Structures are given as C-alpha cells and as structure tokens.
Amino acid sequence: MLTAQPMTDTHTATGQARIQARFQACASEGRAALVTFVTAGDPDLATSAAILTALPAAGADIIELGVPFTDPMADGIPVQLAGQRALKAGQTLKKTLAMVAEFRGAGHDTPIVLMGYYNPIYSYGVDKFLKDANAAGVDGLIVVDLPPEEDDELCLPALAAGVSFIRLATPTTDDRRLPKVLQNTSGFVYYVSMTGVTGGAITNYDAVGDAVARIKRHTDLPVAVGFGVKTAQDAETIARGADGVVVGSALVERVRLSLDADGKATEKTVSAVTSLVSELAAGIRSAAKAAA
Image 1 (cartoon, rainbow, N blue to C red):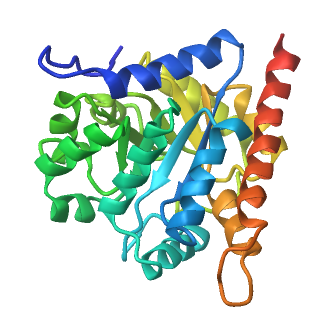
Image 2 (spheres, rainbow, N blue to C red; image 1 turned 180 degrees about the vertical axis):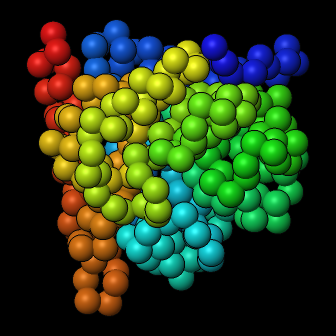
C-alpha cells in the first residue's frame, strides 16, 4: 500500500498530524468526518471570517477554505460565483492566510485545507507561501491543476514543510493511474464522485462505494468523498462507506441565497451556512448510529 511520504526531521508535523488526528477521532466515534468547503472572502472578509469561526461548533470536522481565482476551471457555477463575490470584495491570498491566522489565534484547532489553483501560489512565491501558510496554521493544500507529474512545483516542498498535499481521484482514475496519484498524497484522498465540475448530483451511490473500496485497497490514507453531496440524506448515504464527506457547492449556495438585493450579507448569512452544516453533521451521525 502507498502512504504519505515521510517528512524530514527538520520540519514540524503540525499540519499532517492535525488532519490525521481529526480523522482518527472521528473513526473512534464510529463515524465519517464532515469536511466543509467555503470560499474565503465570500461575500466579504468580515462575514467570511464569521462563517469560518462558526463552522466547528456547527459540526465541521475539517474545513476546506477556497482561494478565489479568476479562472476556476474545475468549479461549477455556485463556486464560481462565490469566487467572483470574494474577488469583487477584495479578497487576496494574503488576506486568506490572515483569516487562518486569526482563526488559530482564537484557539481553534479544526484542520484547515486551502483549496484552489496554482497561479495565486506561484504569483505569491512558493517558498514564501509555504512559510506564511505554516505560520498561519494551514494544515493542507488541494491544488486542482497540479498533476502528480508536477510534484516538484509544490507538492514535495509542501510535504517537506509539514503541510499535507491532498490529491483528487476521480471515476476515470483507473488502477494503473491510481498509484501515481497516491504517490505523494498526504492527509487524505479526495474522491470526486463524478466527472465534470462541482455542483452536480450523485446518480450512483453504489459506484461511489465501490470506488472508495478500490482506493482503500491501494492506500492507508482516509478517503473522503465530495461533489454532489447536498443534503443530510446524501451525507448519511456517503458516510456509510467513506472516511469523510465533503460538502461545498450547497454551502456557498446558502451564502448566495442569504444575500440582499445588492449582493450584500444579511443577518441570516452566517446562520444559513451553519444550519446546513448542522444538518449534514446530523446525517453523518445517523449513519454511524445505524451501523452500530
């Protein structure tokens, strides 16, 4: 089996250890982890920070924080619109790292994974980014446009710096390709339940379960399933066979629907997100109770 690449002794293991500990804690409760995605800076910095702060108490076990980018090729309309709102409000990678630092400064230990594209990191400077990300308390990265063949660009430096590099596997990742995808993956494996962009609907839960089982034959890392999870029932169904359930588009859509006619946050914006997170967490716990 393939597992995460060992870290060098000269770097801390905070990021990798925090993610591993959270999955282990969830497993000890007999349940999957709830991984929630929100876009940093959506619909504005202050509201986004308030959402981030509220997610752990609502039931989020791991938080994916989207880094807005002008050309989000893997994202469906809801996440694209969230990124546009954030960019319009002035969100930057530097501000996103500051959000994480503030979150950590408030005493939160929920793992945070930055998810996005390589261009903003490249523009920031890889070495500087990893140093600042580590200092802020970022635990992992998902960079959707860097394939395993480009691991020298960011994946290997991130692992050496103690930051997990989480890789995506898809329905088209066959057994011949899978070992390459898993080679330097750390933290967990993100299984994309369908081909295409975010925001679709899962049509074959049995196929998802079979895919998760196949991936787990190749690695000891936890496998989390995302794309198409919208409701507590979806989360409950996926949680029966996966180590984690990832929800994103449904949450950023809750943000959009809570905004006023001018696209500004309202007093309902934070609770619109956290109420769905609580429902999803309850769905996952229902799956655990049914299996007990």
